[in-house]
Image (cartoon, rainbow, N blue to C red):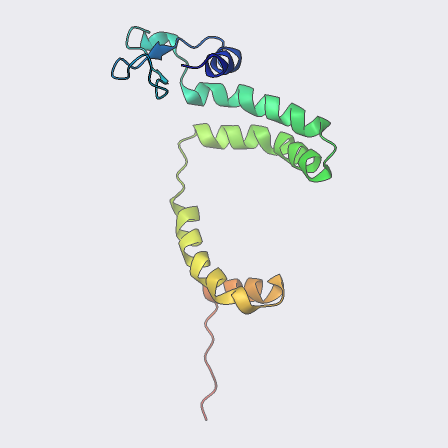
Amino acid sequence: MSGGYAKAVREGLPDAEVCIDPSTSASSQAARPTTCAATPAASRRPRAALAPDHLAAWLGWASRSKLKPFVKLARTIRRHREASSQRSGSGSRTGGSRGLNSKLRPISHRSFGFHSAAPLVALVYLCCGGLVVTPPLR
């Protein structure tokens, strides 16, 4: 492992235990850190447990950003954070949104030639709104 790579791993992941894959030779540049089997699984935090800390750090960065869209997004996420965390822990399913998304994708694909979003919205309401349109008979 090169010195720069080892330094980056130490700085970026200070609590990580670095093991070298024994299948690579010492002179090989392909030596990369792998998960050590000796590290007890209980000492490693699951990724889901790290998410609130990472989100809080990103929200802090976005709030201090000079980019207005990031500041606005951070405010929106903070405003709805409690409701979304309650919803994610309640065992809710994403089937409904996935089903709607599978209907919206082809509609959106058909609307590539439209000049604005208004016709796309009208097409979505027409296809997914439950409205039955019967053309007049001649």
